[in-house]
Image (tube, rainbow over all chains, first blue to last red):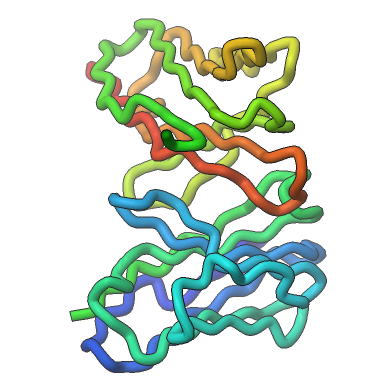
Length: 114
Length: 111
């Protein structure tokens, strides 16, 4: 049974470049979360989708960040243009029913912006 | 004051010992509580939910003290494989998607 699948695992890019992170949630899960983790700030919720609809994007740092979920099996998080302070581990997680059921995290994408 | 606070550690504990750590939360209306485990350079994984009456899962025991607003995690007969960061997580009563994450307590089990 496949878990949440994220790609790429690692991304190194130069400041100003566009970065696209991808996520495939667990089949049947209707909730999808994008988190960012850094040493300084810990885990931060960036955006939450329910049934493919963005419910809360208040955690998205600024207009450079955007996220889409065109269907139940795919989501993207895009940063354009990227900046060094965006360097972090980005996790996608899915669940059956918001946070009333366990969150299943993907392996994460480790982003380094130079 | 942070909404969820944990001692960052690290806790250095010999194999076979018992270790416990606490987590305090600031919102008395918090509804649900969890412990997640995160191995180095891996994703967080749910360890256990914390119930009002306390609960046990093998060597792990979780307790909730609503009056003092803290939860605890006790690990008995610790194994080398228990080495990880333990994240305390609190769900507010007024949201079905928000979780408040602690920064984590790092545990190192030594042979």
